[in-house]
Length: 264
Image 1: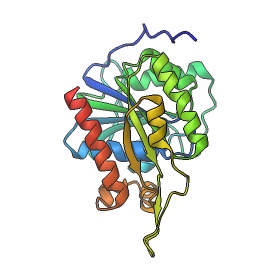
Image 2 (image 1 turned 180 degrees about the horizontal axis):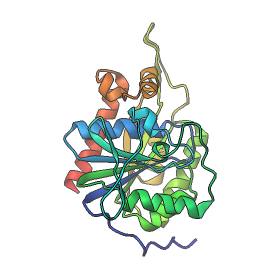
Image 3 (image 1 turned 45 degrees about the vertical axis):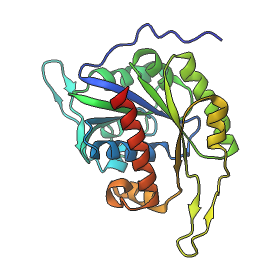
Image 4 (image 1 turned 90 degrees about the horizontal axis):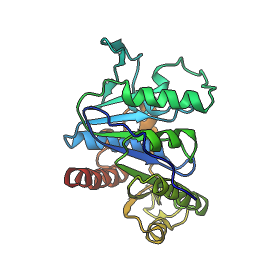
């Protein structure tokens, strides 16, 4: 299969690097991880932006506690991102009334993604994270063809089905010549808060899959009810409960990613 053409990629003024947070399938906690990762990176002193590229299911506003509509300003009519938890963010969820569905075909999706990339007043950023929808569809094709992606982070759970989908995502990024900085295994295990027993509820296999695909394995994030409950409140767990096991693992991931981009 031939590689997807990438000659139309454009630079985004003021943004040093862009990282796609991707998953082969839904339900692996990718958006929760992306929101917490963005906050953890911002807490390290990096200038961070978060673009919610999941146009059909925009969950980032709720996870970051974002409220209100972005303003349009300047002669170019640029969209002003909202600020929360030390970072800047934009999402389709900020442009719609609650519960309003997005019923668009591919060309409209591509146009909206282009607006979010090139017509948002991001300012100076060290890293723009892009929370992708699951799979390898229209949004992914638009981003890999037009956005100057400097890396991709693959998120999976250890279930066999999720790991099978990882291979498709990895192949997509390889065909589009986007460097894969690594694989992270989310919901890797659950520790009972009463007896302390640790259980790999969804199985194991993330590290082995990373070795088979010859990509770095960046660690395990445990299944933590606090991460879910904090996502519902709009304050990510890394900020509300930095002592939690999931927060510690996310902080380590942020450290690895921050080091990667600061030394690249």
